[in-house]
Length: 184
Image 1 (tube, helix red, strand yellow):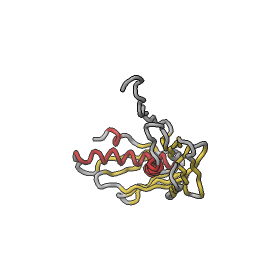
Image 2: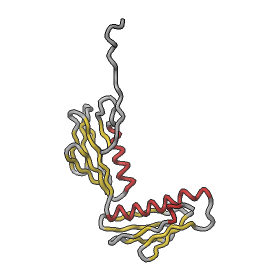
Image 3: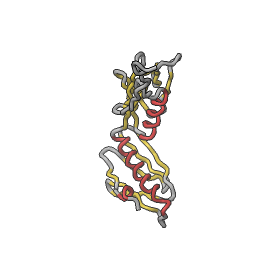
Image 4: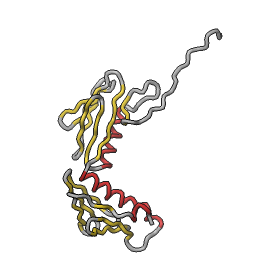
């Protein structure tokens, strides 16, 4: 049995969780709504203000990862519709800029053309002082879009220029070393 899967999930104030049949979980809150299709190896029960995930039928060794994953996804859905998730990215480099135009993020990061990243439904972009904030209710989608933005110009190890997560440490390389004086 999964140690994470056994922990009941507390439903926060203002969030409603409902089962649609035995195959789907729907979570509605002040920031939006999310749904998740369950696999056949786990079942979900709603008891008062808690959600419990348990194995459905005979539990095999191969089913353990799905048990803990299902519990973590439902917990993230509840947190997402109540608080939301956000990732912050930092632009480092001379002339590197970002701006929001409608629902799109426009990056000027040293290419001959600006790079436009459209915001999928449920994702918002904000830019201030060379810091890009990606926010939304779906944790997976927020992380995916943030990684796509970072992959436009990943930080390079010599000067540290590029797009990195706020707080990310970039290992720096020394670069070319000048020849020692006096050697031939």
